Amino acid sequence: MHTPPISALYIALGALLLLGLTFRVIAARRASKIGLGDGGDKRLLGAMRVHGNAVETLPIQLLLLVMLEWSGVAPIWIHLLGTAVLLSRGLHAWGLSRHPGVSFGRFWGTLISLGLMLVMPCWLIYLLLIG
Image 1 (spheres, rainbow, N blue to C red):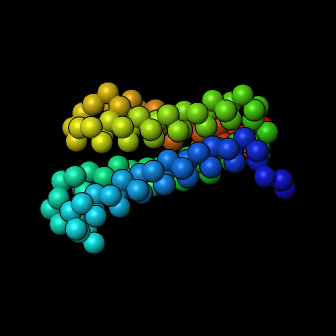
Image 2: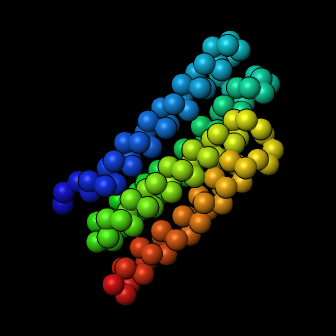
């Protein structure tokens, strides 16, 4: 099998997003001089949760994207889903970084992300069983 070219693009962009979030955690650790855990520092805890939330959802979403592309889903759909994955995680990271409670970015990032976590596996199951 060949590398799925569209998914590969979104995996690379997702990796850059995670790298950026990782650097935010490193910067917060250095500023607070905390090497392990959050030490009660709210800024560090926030950066860790933003990164953690991305790590919790981004890999499975990108894996589902690859499987859909390999299953023959039209390229336009792979681009739309890939864009939605990155948009949802970016919105969530932006919203949670600005405010620990409810915010526009956190709400819509979560809603889009959860929608993708429902649509993509169901679509894949449909293709495997019916298509």
